[in-house]
Length: 618
Image (cartoon, rainbow, N blue to C red):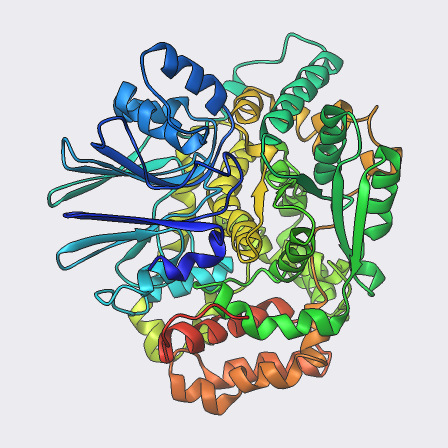
């Protein structure tokens, strides 16, 4: 199991075998390079911990615990967890500011405590097998355990086909769970409980209008974000920044340079296809800040060569193709540094996605007479020729009209996902569709939106994005892509202090009219070029539509041809072939749908049909 995670920690490993518990870890040395090996114990050896992550407030906690009589043998942030638990019990989780997944064994009470950070930056999987509780940072660690079966969870598959990822607490395998963000697991004898210790609440933002002017709010936010960046630059090895040229990563880069008082290493990648390329903006920011900039232009061959190995990196099906450039820029950065900061989380925290604008426009569209919408507007949009450029107008309009009659929570997912409703029923084999029936996705997403406690519908959508898209797509993408090359990525927008500030920030300062991330634009206006402050979100995407008609065509056909689809029995061969034929002929852009199917098929071949002894790809 430990060997399966060697990529996450190539600098060392540790093992504790003390029946009834076994703990193991792989170490990526960032802080206390000499004495930070794990597992780490308290003074009398009754408490041990294995841990993946970083605690940004560990110097302050360490000083407090020392004053309370605790003795530290290392400078590692890991040791802080042991003594904090010893001092405050389970409540110590409320005091941690960082990204983490850890397992702590208390031999005094025979209790295992396993926890995941508030927003799910670090992953944690677990399963109960006959006679054992097994857990790990990735599913592949559990798959190395001989007692774990490999039975496909059809409900998880159905959710994946819609969302393009499997949401917590489900996994693609029956009987395995992802511990949700902000939860810990308590195991004692035969009793295993999931306990929530934190939730992101936007209700404080709805308490009333801010007393301070917008300019003062922007200054206050900038100060909080600057402090978060400074705290997350804590390291005994060099730290860089992943700079896309978008507003979020540019803001992080600017604050890093300000804190460092000089250049910081920045890393960007570009694409030959101009509609996907952001390097001119990244260069503009780097020159403006005086960063030590590094740039790599990706060829189609570099990216296409990586696609067949994705299933080995991703032990659950995952259909966000931006993991390809994310992996490649991580590998590029790892040649220079061991830690990077990134701008992930800014869109969820500050209303950065275009779907928020669509939610504001949807009521006006629904107010049109039904005959005008269904007999005139929607047929015209349906006949628009399919373009393959990034987020072309026809693609966005077709997405918009398909979800406008649904409840807001499901509508939000339909605008961004793949298969829904009749389309999903058609793509599944008839017996699989019959077995699934109503998979409960609409109820699942509605319950998440309702759990926000927010009154404003757009605040419910922000919460939904955080609980689903951030946890299920954005953070797993960054974690798997960067840890695959042994690079630690930190995300200041999800720092606890930033989260607390934005939980109190009114929606009108995040989405002002149709201007997204308004507060961040105001906060960084003096630090970044106007072209960056005024940029629309582009996203980190790749030309999948074109690839599926060219360089990826033969490989994709190998997984999606009717003979194979029919033999495997999960999907309807004719429906898959119809999607394929229409896309190849240019009658439609079915790139998202075909990619979703292809990524599942690759996962199935690697992990379900012919599971081989684990070996990390070269």
